[in-house]
Structure formats: C-alpha cells, structure tokens
Length: 429
Image 1: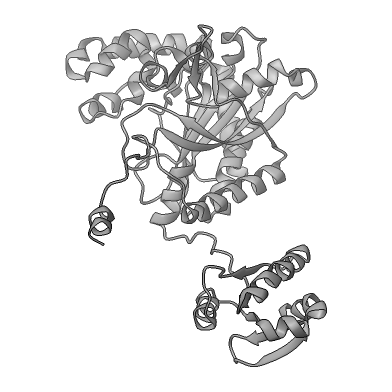
Image 2: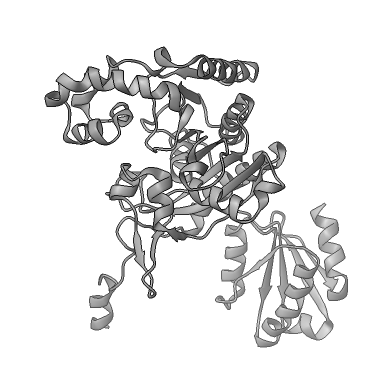
C-alpha cells in the first residue's frame, strides 16, 4: 500500500515533445466539427481533396517558400536521409501541392484545378498560446487560373467555412502587392523611405531591408509600427493591369456581400505572393485565422511552366480558439440510445451475439463490460442518457428472451431475442 501511494503522484517518464500536444476525444469534437465544415464547403464549390507527403526535398521550400522567410530560415524541421538526402517536414502545403499537380500530369488535364486539404504541418517555433510545432491547416488552392474571379472564389471558400461554423463578425483584410513589373518600382520607393530610419527599427527589419524589403511591412514589433504606417503604400504604385485586377476582386466580393477592409500594409510572410493578398480576422482574437493570396510565379521559381495560381490556408487550432472564445459549442458527443446490461457469465457471453446483430442492423449500443452488478450498469445507462436498457440474465438466456426497460418510465417488457432488432427500430422511430 505504501508503494502505491508513493507512485500515485509520480511523473510519467515520457512526455509529449515540446510544442506538441495529444488530441484527446474532446478535442476531436471540435476538430470533427471544423473538418465537416471544410468538406461541405469544398463539395459545394467543387474542390477536390489532395494530400502530399509529410516530408519533401528541402529545396522545394527553400526555393518555393523563400530562403529569406522566417519559415525557411528558422522554423523548418530538417531530416537527413541515410543516402545523404536532405528533407524537411512540410512547414506549409502550397509548394507540395503545386509539385504534385505538375508531377502527376494533372496539369495537362485539369486547368484550372481546384484542390482542398486538411493536413498536419510542422514548424520549429517557440511554442505559445495557439501555436504548436505540429499543427493543422485547412486550405484551398486553384491552379492554372489568372482571372480575378478565382481570387474572390478562394476568399469565398475560406469565408464559407467560417460562416458554416457560425463564427461571428468575420472581416477580410485585403491588399494588392502588384506584379513583378510594378513591384520593383514600389520596392525602390520603400527602400528610399526606410534608408534613414534603419536606426529606429528592429534588428530583423534591418536584415529585411537588404534581403526582402517588402517584408518590412510584415513586422509586428511595436517600435516599428509608427514607421510602417507612414510608409509608401503598394496601391499607389500598381500598374494598370494590377489596378484592374484588384478592382475586380473587390467588386466580386461586394457582389457576395463578403465584408472586407483594404489594409495598405498587408504583404503576408511568404516570398511567392503577388497581386492579391488577404487575411481573415474575427472579434475577440488578435491574430489571423488564416490568409492567402495569388502566387503566379511560384511554378516558374520551382522550374515548372508559367502557371498562375491563388490559394488560402487557415489554422485549425486558431479556428477552434475562435469557436471557444465565441462560446460556439462543439458537436455534442453521440450518445447511444440503447444500453446492454448483462448478469452472469452466460449472459455476458450471449451479449456478444446480441451486440453483433444490433451493429449489423446499424443500431448504436453501449455496454459496461467492466461492471458486474445490475445497479452499477443501470447507473451507467442513466448517466449515458440512454433511452432504453436491454437486460439479459441467466433466465433470459435460457428462455431466449431479453428485457427492454424504458429508462424514463421504468416500464419493462420481455421480447424474444429474434425480434429484438425490429422492436428497437420500432421504438426509436
């Protein structure tokens, strides 16, 4: 007895890795709710599911996501293969989806192609509230399409998931960062603006000034905000083609009555974006639920053909945080309306035959094989909220009958086992 008391509070030798967590049954009530909303939205809008390997050639992300991004520089989990290969656990989905589209040959038969995914990703970042080193994203991609209508459709799909989940007061923050042609002139003006202010910005912004000036507008450091808000705006430097494209995207959003605000400093944190960029916010949270944009040059960057594309990704854990913050309930746990109770070894053995017949008929039924007494099993049936209890004892086995007990009224009736399925179906109508 003494040894059991000492071991009761003893910490288990193994713990989940830092920045990860176990998904327990109650977590899946929320996960399943979100996944159901994604699948419904995807089905209605014609998106097909895609899944890529959890690890890829590291160069896919270095060239695709961008060697100057925090994702590549700081957050990738690297794997060394036994043959000397260099892999990375996928930190995002877009480069892998594009690779799969081209490699599979689908690019010759599906254009444009509309995909959605629901996948675990991995980033080595400092764990904090709502951020994990293994996390889940849902996303939409449309490949091979440059029409602004598809930008609006990607936003509509992301917004549709939030609507399906009944998340309140969703707002889309949107901007255009232009194309290769007009962006070069904007970046020149941006560098001129920051040139004499480098002593006032953070260390990361000093590096961004030389490595990727557009990322200066993505800085979240407090000391950089006053300078960022006064910086030249991308919209003032768009070429006529990009202006028209952005105008049409906004017009399509207006037609769908999707709420948005133009955010002139929004650029997103990945190198491959062009033209439309957006993020999704809701009340009560200070972080984006997701975001995305157009990436017309990613295929060429990876050595593929020119292929305009647009996509979005949303953090599943962040969406769940929004559901909890807004007190939107998860899908209630399914309760079996039927509970099987046994008394004695013969009845316990016979229970398996009865359970199999009920399962085969599509009737959900629960039991308590860890309990032996009638009282404890009835208590559990009541706790489960069961509509009826099936009671099987030695006498019932001998007579080939079973007792059906109405858990609300307490009324009981003997029913032949061979008629049990039909009787339960009649009562559950």
